[in-house]
Structures are given as C-alpha cells and as structure tokens.
Image (tube, rainbow, N blue to C red):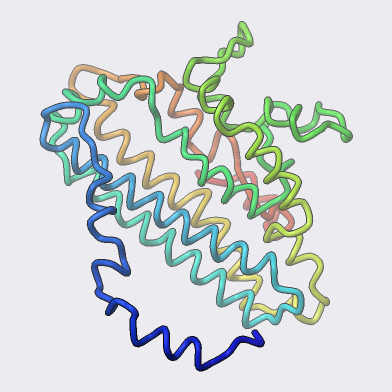
Length: 288
C-alpha cells in the first residue's frame, strides 16, 4: 500500500484492545428484536427470520466471490458452491425450529398482527436467485413461452414467478404486499438483473473451458445446489408453513394474503436455475 509501517505500529500503542463483543457487535445485534405483541413465541419467529437473513447475506457473499473471479478452477467453483449449499442445508434443517419450536396457538395469536408483512418480501432471497441464474428462468411458467425476447428487465419483473403470491391474475391488480415490496426494491432488482447478467452462477459456469465445465464434481455441485434451493429448501419451508396454516379449523391464508401453495410448491412453478443440466424426465417430475 506504500504506507509507512512505523506509523501503523505506533498507532497500535494507542489502540483500544479488541474484545469479542465489540468485534461481533453483540450489543447492537441483540437490540434488533422488537416484538409487536406480548406473545412469547413471537420472539422465536423474529430471531429465526433474522438468522435466515444473515445466512442469505453469507450466500450472496459467496455468489459474488464466484462472479468476481476471473480465472476459475473447478476446485474453486466447486468449493464455493459447496459452501453455499451448506448454508442452504442449514436453512433446511432449521425449519424444525419453525415446525416444532413454536406453539401453534401462540403463532395464530400473533400472526395477524404481522399482516401484511410476509417472508415473500425478503429482497436478499430474490438477489440470490438473480445471482444464481439467468432471470428468464425466474419467469412465471405460465408466461415463459409468450414473452418477447427483447423484454426489458423492468417489464420482466411483472412476470416473475413470485408475482403469483401478490397479484390477482383475474383483475391484474397487485396486492398491498406486492406494491410495497416493489416500491422499496424495484430499482435494486433491476440493477441486480443487469449486474448479474454476465456474472450469475450459470453464466460463470458456461464460460468455463469445456475441460473444467465437464468436471464431474463441479456438475454434481451445480445440480445439488439447484435441487437444494428449489426443491429441498422450498419443501422444508412449505411443510413448516403447512403445520401452522392448515390447522383443525381449516386452511388459512399466509400473512400477506398470498396463494402460498401455488407460490411455494416446486411442482407448480418448476423453478430450475440450470435446466440444461437436467434431463427432460427430471424436469417433468421436478418437485414431485
């Protein structure tokens, strides 16, 4: 850095000793939980989702490392994909906290207070999707074959699969859940779609020389990541939601009012990051 080493060493003489709580910022982190009700299990719900968002940030950190790497080896690519899938494996196994770690009675007490907020509104998860695949693979399956090849990123956002959770397709009207989500993040998403156009995981993969791209361990890591995110993790989320939203009194809407089954279940949307790596039969039976 062409800096004077002695200056840095002298600065250490006056530096405050580092502690764990200062480095991790424990006090700040533990002050970020604010309940909206007096129901005890709401704290579990808040903390669980905050942990999810921290893991999403770790995943995006790894995706961006792959995107920024110029000379990628099979070992580097595979290793980073394995890091990401370990995070998603952790997220999948953690659904036991949601499924068994809260009393349904308590959840039903505080859930209406959360309306219209919804996990649908996790912007980081959408960025993970944009960082993983070409955004055309995130288009609602009902419209994939009908949209113009020259559709812009802004126009494409109206046809993303998650619109199914926030739009009445009979009237075309967007719910408050969706309009507020887009109001806050639309520009972020458009920029991400453009930024990841050449650096998403799929594009980095197809740009590799064939001898690297065809490495069995790398291909398997790509497939495992795809299936883990779009089937295993999603089904874990779905089954946890099912326990709370389909109780003795019947089926309930999600807090944002979404048609949560058709939005979540893989067999409806067939979300696949890397369709070229799967056979026609595997795609046909996706999520079954």
